[in-house]
Image (tube, rainbow, N blue to C red; front, side, top):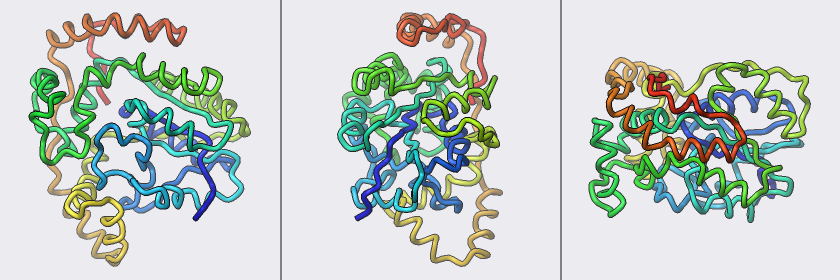
Length: 320
């Protein structure tokens, strides 16, 4: 069994630029992040989700066996930093402790955040895209949280039933506090999605310094995880994983298909991809949610030592 273990983690939050960061970091010659080039290998290697079993994530979505998890790092070679990027770890109460018990010494944690109201709408849209959520109206999905906490109204197609509690998931101060308390502030670095948007190379250089790798390297940074790209390139593979009961089985199945027929099939599925829903929030609902989350934003601002008062503005922010 491979003995290499990761020594850094991008733990989330999802929909905050973690995919763009993953692609930027894995270009560095001193960094190894697992991830195959083929789309049907992509998610299970990029986001194994091994340490967040408390979120009731279905086994067909995640890597649940230790041997399979360690195999992801078998080709790390002599990389100085070996990591993975499971963005749901931030939402998990048990992941920090499990990571600490398992990971190599000198582990480092990276967190990206965005305004909680915009995050909830973007996450709701993402869950709809992958059929984890079936309530299309955002306000109705929020109203269903009490039922879901009691185990009711959980979609049969959902691989993430523990992630449909939108308000709880958006209490970022609680999640960040868990990581600070588990690893110490010196081993955890928190960035904002706006940092990545405004000065991506500067932010990534800071991360290279935090990971103790060369800051001279400049990666190519592209916007990733756009919903249109996700829907049109990965959704059909994700649904195949659900049908087969395992993303790894889906990967093995697709590996056996010759490249040309597989490409034809993917192109056909692209043409059949459904139109995406509007991610804008009703202005009245946005106003109520901004006021509801104002204390949370203030707690997070104090925790990070950053002025986040602009997160309390009612004006709409694009929900990427």
